[in-house]
Length: 146
Image 1: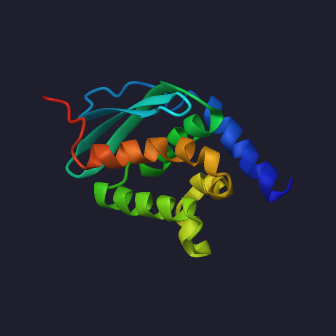
Image 2: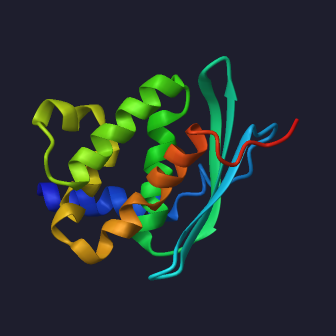
């Protein structure tokens, strides 16, 4: 299996996975992200306590890229500090702009499967939807009133 086939498999598996598709009990953040150009729509929920993303989940619909991206992102940031999640957001956006080093790419773990999207401009919005939604949530948008 070559690298492109492996990346395609990671994207396919994550777009179909139900593991991260769920509402989050006790969510502290809930924010909808929409890509109006193609109809991708997700609602990202986070439970952040003491600066750590304890749990994350999403509900939504859209293309395989947007759904896989949301799932891969959640796998990457769940259990990490908000500070570390912000750093990973920066690396992901750097990857999408095709300006990432191999060492930085390794830090993105399976989310690196989306690296090739940088060469398909029409799909970039799909690949960054969940990540922009996470960024906005960490910036304080979508805070749930307790």
